[in-house]
Structures are given as structure tokens and as C-alpha cells.
Amino acid sequence: MNDQPTSAAVYSEQAFYFIERRRLRDAQRVLKEGLAQYPQDPDLLFHSAQVEWLNDENAAAENTVRQVLVISPEHVPARQLLAAMLVERHEYADAELLLIGLLKDFPERAELYGRYSRLMLRTLHLEKAEQLAHEGLRYDPENAECLLAIALCETARGGARPNAALTRLLGAHPESLSTVHALVVALVESGRIDEAHRIAQGAMRADPANENLVALVRELRIQNHWTMKPLWPLQKWGWGASAAMWVGGMMVSSALQRAHSPLALPFALLWIAYAIYSWVWPPLLRRIL
Amino acid sequence: MGNDDLLRPTLSEYRQVPALYSSTGFFLSSFFGGPVGAAFYALCNSQRLNRLWHDMPVIIATASAAYFVIFLLQSNGQMPGVAELMGASPRRALEITLRALALAVFGAIYLLHRKFFRAARVSGTRPLSSWVPGIAALLLGIWANTSFINWILAHH
Image (cartoon, rainbow over all chains, first blue to last red; front, side, top):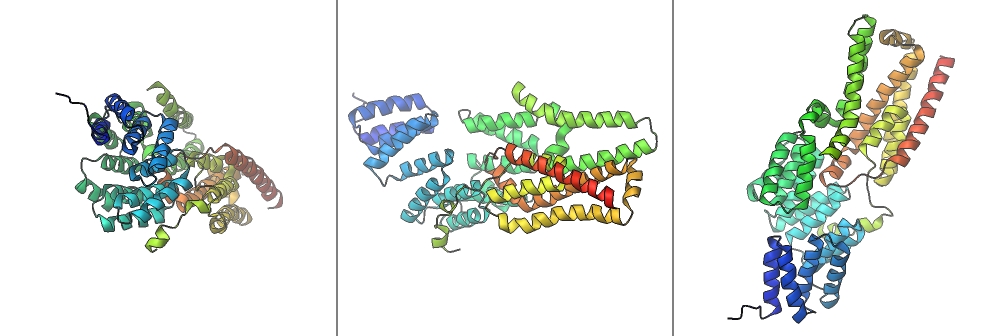
């Protein structure tokens, strides 16, 4: 029996199956076969671009996706992928125009509002990001992209305060990578590095090929290393803790000196050593691990 | 904001897309450059956020308030007491007080820009390189602080 695909659509389906499972070599093999027979098929070319993008061959991916848009200018996934590529290249204004074009064509697609919202958040337009995500939720109240965008906006506004959108995201999409991302960001912002590390590790076990997750777990592993424990006030309260420690250290040091205490010198040395440790050790650890 | 407003391009209006210089550079500029260092660095951030004219009065008023507090302490004869409490010379006491106030200025301005710093962190945006504004803030701040302390010690 001949089990070779008989149409571009079947090749495309097979490629998509492999891409979803991150079996990129298999996807490449299928796409090569398919494109040999249907070199102008926009879906096959789009999946090729996806594979190149996932393999970090960004220039090739962009060429391929532009080729798709020459053949089929309205190809929605290709337009979305090109927008993502432009965001990655920091060409935010062009990415915005592409997303607006998509939203004008599909004004009820919630995930497009979510993506535009993330772009606005990335370019520090918090109010517009929130409005876009809320608009998207009008069309699909449980859309993961929009809930993620609002959860991130709420984290940006409120830090460690309760985050209603994150709670909704956890309820609606407990298994989604977006949920993990939002949760980890919220935990890191409230200084709960240990929990963030455990959650990110769990997600990485489920999706070990995800490079973003691997990088995130690595960074959290550094932050959560036992040699970083003495720096927890700085991790939790950031620059506020640094300023408070300097003012507190000056006050204690002056008081000990005025009292002619034998502890004055050890305290001053310990204080300076801690300051040096907090500056020097984290970058060193990052190189070591 | 209606749907038409939401779908009006925002980013093509800018010459430079909004971004921030790092908070580390901001802290160091404030710590070593005093209130002027903090203000200068914060103004650079405001300029990159396209909020320069909006933020400028608050930033300048906050930094000026720090110098005004020192001026009041010195004019009212309280600075020698502060120096005695610290066990430091009058100049050193002025330097330490100015640094403590600079950290307060840093805190106040950080609150003004906090949502932007947090938005950059949660969206994974890399901060801009701080070398140029940081060094400029440092030099300007050190010059301003030295001039201010010399002036206040000579005239009050």
C-alpha cells in the first residue's frame, strides 16, 4: 500500500503534527518532500518558515514567510508569524501595523488583541495594553493570550498584590505555558524565587525542548542557589533594600563608633564585605553555573 | 477608548520606541551623583518614555527639595548636631546627608516610573545600555554636590 501523502494539504498536516511535538527533523523531511511536489504551496512554505524560526534560522524564516505573503498576501498565520519576527527584531512599529491589519480583517479574534496587547506592554504602553486585552476578552472571556496580557499588566501595576487575571488564567488554562509564564513572573516580582523555580522546573520537564523555559529555569536556578540566600532581602525588596541597608549600616556604624564599641570595626568590615558580595557574586555565579 | 482608537497605530508616532535605561544605573547615579545625578538620569529615562515635559517639574522639584533640606538644616544651625551624631567632620556629614537624601530622591522618582520598570521586567524587555547617561549623571552630580557643599560651608 502506498502511504505517501497525495496532496499538499496532507503534507501540511503531517508537518504540523511534527512541529507541534517539536520533532523538527521529521517536519523538515516531510516539508522537503512536499515542497518538491508543490513548491508554491503557501501552507507548506509557512510550515517551513515555522521550522526555520524554531531552529533559530531567523533570516531564512523571514525570507520564507515573505515568500508566502507574495503568493498569498492574506495568509493569516504567515502575517502573525511575520509580526512575531518583527517584534523579536525590535521593529515594533512595523509589527504593530501588521497586527492592526490583522485586527481590521478579523476584529473578533481575541488572540490578536492579546498579541497586540503584549506588544504594547513590551513597548511600555501599559494603559493601551490593558484596554486591548479587555477588548479581546469581550469576544472570548477565557482567551489565554488576553488573560496572560492582563495578568502581566496587573503584575506590572501591583507587584505582589493579588492578581485577579492570573487567578482566572490559572482556572481557565492550568496546563498552558502562558499560565506558567505569568505565574513565574508574578512570583519573581513578589520575591518568591523558590516557588517560581519549582514551577518553572515542572513546566520544563513537560516541555524540555522549549529554549525560553530552559533559559528561565537556568536564571531561576541561579537566583535560588544556596549561595544567593544571604541576598534574599535584596531579591525581595530590590533597590529599596539596598538603600535601607546603606542608611541602616551608616547609622549602626556611627552609633558603634561613638560608643567606642569593639564591634565597630568588625561591623564595618562585615557590611563592606556584604556589599561587595552582593555586587560580585551573582554575575560570577551566572558564569559558573 | 473606542475600537477605532484602539486600532490607531501608536508606535509609528515615535522617533524612538519607548524604553528605559537600567534601574542599576539609576541607583548608582543617585548613590554617587547625589540628587542631581538622580534627576539627570531620571530625565534621560523620561525622555526615552516620551514623558519629558510631563515628568520634568516633579523630578526637578524632588531633587531641589533635597538640597533645600540641607540648606534649611545648615541655616538653622542643625547640621553641626547631625555631624556630631555621626561622629564626622562638617563636610563629611554634609556628604552623607546629601547621599541619604539622594536615595530618597531615587525612591520618589522610582515610584514615578515604577510601572514602566515593572512593565519592562514582566515583558522581558532588555534595558538600554546605561553607560552614557550614567557617566554623565555621575559627573554632573559630583560637580553639583561639590559646588553646593563648598558654597554652603563658605556662606553659612
